Image (tube, rainbow, N blue to C red):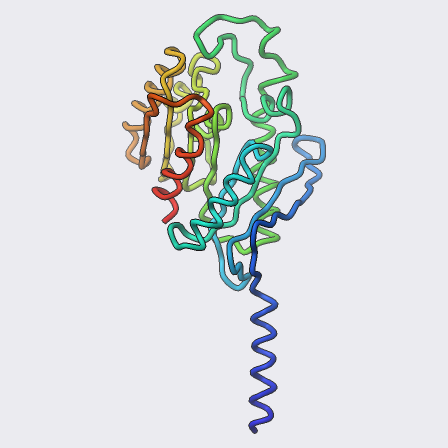
Length: 269
């Protein structure tokens, strides 16, 4: 009997080791052949400390992964390991190239106005660099997120991190049947197409409960005013739990780190 108990104990220990991974500053790449984008797209995954596939975890999806994934995965890993937030899976979403595909992915139209309110013509925003957001939305929700759920132990609590165009994208999808419980919107390009995000939200206000963390800075004035008009609309919706922070001494890019740190502590405890 003692021998049988010993063998059983060894089996259980081996099973436990097989399920649990001690992860540290690692990322795994995946590739999807997207029918919506008609091309291959990559995404990157970082797992929390002692990831265990018999448990389940929230997922944090990060746009602009070329610049932001390493920063966010390291912060999430450390905050999770120290029990400041829930241990979470981080998924980085790159956009292939900055000049064309990023704008195509993250915008839903071709703007005829710039961030300072200046009118522009079709040489600025056109089919080559903008307006494919719905295709990308289908890729994100019907292909990428499905693939993540297939490969990893997820629990259905999903956060989207978007800055600039990514923040505009996060605001735009609030008028749709979108899957996220939390959306971070950092200095969003609400100016794009003269505030179409605001009009979309007015026409189709969200009926899903969503936590929004929105941050912004003061330059230029047109950009700031559009964001504040959007904030006013968000505050009027009972399904949105909104936190905002204004950074008067920061720039469009410099507010990112503190925006994420403060926001993730607020929305992922």
